[in-house]
Image (cartoon, rainbow, N blue to C red; front, side):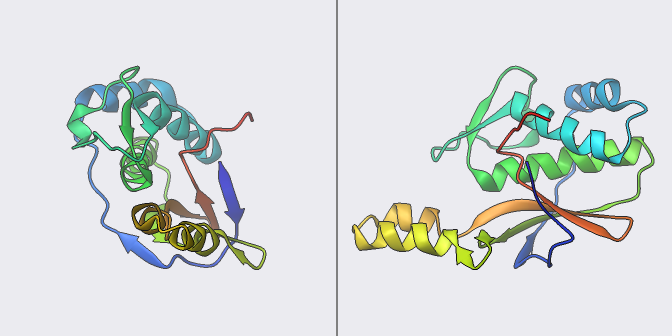
Length: 159
């Protein structure tokens, strides 16, 4: 899901990791060959969702575990880590220049900070673990041709 176009920069940026998974690299090569920027953004969302699914109980350890069709439960941190690894690889092999960042910060739509609202709700209920889990969110920021888009690969949408 593309969240915003031409938006402001991220709160914090996490370290990116190389894909280092020959089977996934080959799959990306086969499925992104001759694709343009936007197609690769969407295709890497699809590929990420073929290897992971969202869960608060993460079993993800490293990119070496990734396999198409063997979906591993994980949270937004690793979901975006994998997506950034995949899209950086796809851009590289398709000679597309873009800067890709794994970001963490609040989810703000309009003037409403949803992370603060949800986290505060859980805190009021005494659910400290849930409050801490929802205090921020990871997403991907891509800068390409002076445009900035924010992508949340957890959410797949029909194009």
